[in-house]
Length: 83
Picture 1 (cartoon, one colour):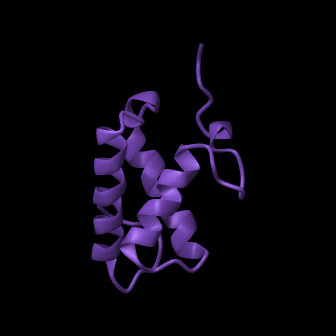
Picture 2 (cartoon, helix red, strand yellow; picture 1 turned 30 degrees about the vertical axis):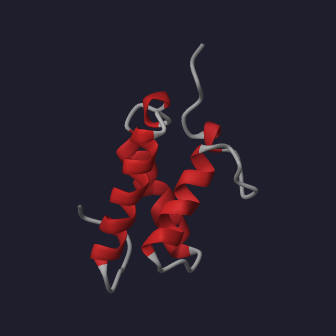
């Protein structure tokens, strides 16, 4: 994947994306979001810009945001749930 940030190690972001997607698929949270790959990538970039550099930390930040436990904002503003 081509990442939209200057990154000295794009494989770190690729690994974080893989970790987060695997978790979201196994926990069935991925089914709740269309384009989950793009949404997770957006969240990873946000964490990268905030200073996170470890792939597990990056993945966890994205997972927590999608689970609705993030104190930094409401992710549903990006993709509102349609009922």
